[in-house]
Amino acid sequence: MPDPVDASVFFVGNATMIIRCHGFTLLTDPNFLHRGQRAKLGWGLGTRRRTDPAIDIGGLPPIDLVVLSHLHGDHWDDVARDGLDKDVPIITTHHAARRLRRQGFHRAVGMDTWEEHRVRRGDRLLKITATPARHAPGPVRRLLPPVMGSVLDFGRDFGGDFSGDLGREGRLRDGGRPDLRLHISGDTIMHPCLSEIPRRFPDIDVGIVHLGGTRVLGMLVTMDGEQGAEWLRLIDPFTALTVHYDDYEAFTSSLTDFQRYVRRLGLSHLVHYLMRGETYSLPLRRHGIGPVPRAF
Image 1 (cartoon, helix red, strand yellow):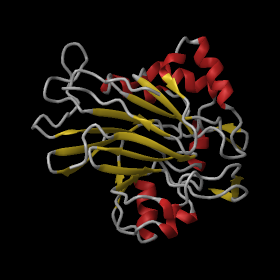
Image 2 (cartoon, helix red, strand yellow):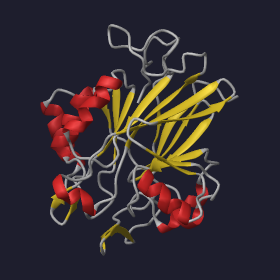
Image 3 (cartoon, helix red, strand yellow):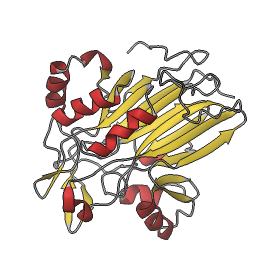
Image 4 (cartoon, one colour):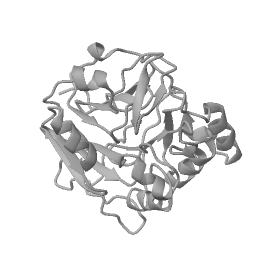
């Protein structure tokens, strides 16, 4: 069994990460296009990539499962379709799962909001919970694929199953705490539906926020700097990582915008600015009593 304190995020680029914890290796939103190549957004729309991924798809380690927020060309591209093992489980929306199964990914699993998917390995447990996300306001939503955020709980299965049941103080009861809880926003704008996330998960160790201020037909469809800072205040994680901020021409809000609004809210101490090719050590809990900070 791998060392239980071995927990990290390797940032490939855009929203693509390799997350390792408790012997599990996850890949998120696989996007391996290179600089100058075009991602398909549907309805004849697309956006050109400005950057190269930190590694190519052939450099991936063995992957236990993929967490896919939605089916857009900057999150699931032709390289991923052709290069990933067709037997890899993919946890995603129902919309994406149906299309992935038609591409031969027969283990794609579609989830409803708040639905859970569990994977066990010995006494180690990974639980994935689909969380709400809103890719665009009003009727424009119909032009874009459904999207989900996710909460990833890594822990040990001692019967409590860290089900999310809360004690009087809003903390998980003894025996039910994960060793690590991550929340990935997915491509979303700020919306009232997100407010249920911190009510159900008031103790997020790491929040990973998709930024960029992506615009499609002039409409904001991912959080810009101001909304990203508001998301950080709402979710209130122990620490936060930034992704999805400069890789495509459709992005209109820079990382500097986010930094400015974060400073205004007095939250700069929470954020680590994740760079492509960087590995970040994740804060694990000790004996279920809270996250242990790691040096940046």
